[in-house]
Image 1 (spheres, rainbow, N blue to C red):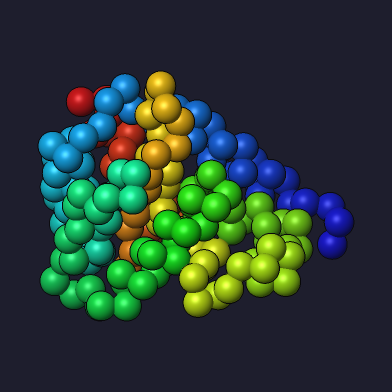
Image 2: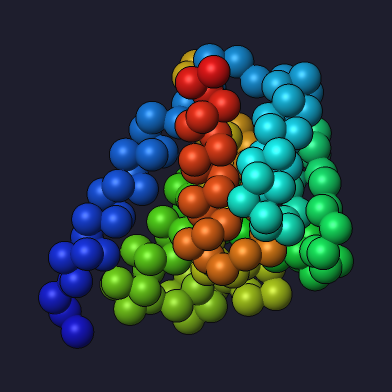
Length: 160
């Protein structure tokens, strides 16, 4: 399977564009709180139960597990965040890209499945002046839905 599906190619380009657009001028603990609460409200509006994590420079600034989530969601968040921090792109972008290239984390990158997962929902926290400095992550839905909730939530929060 050397030819990449045109739909996947388009989706990868779209995700790369998201990573170039969803950039913050500044970000601090108050921003994390406001964004986190905004994402909680957006999930409630969609009748979705998720766990939300916002981490800046290794410091967890926001964590909320909605009613109906599971403690395992935090492990998924940790593993998704590791993917974002290793590859520098969203966890879903990385998952689709590596799948399209027929690459496997453990085999091709020596990254253990116990610490890394190719699943959607983690997005790089990017500061205009500093670059990638953290993660904004959602867990609890199917991959594409986790990714969509985090990216549409960040976009609408930034546009306010």
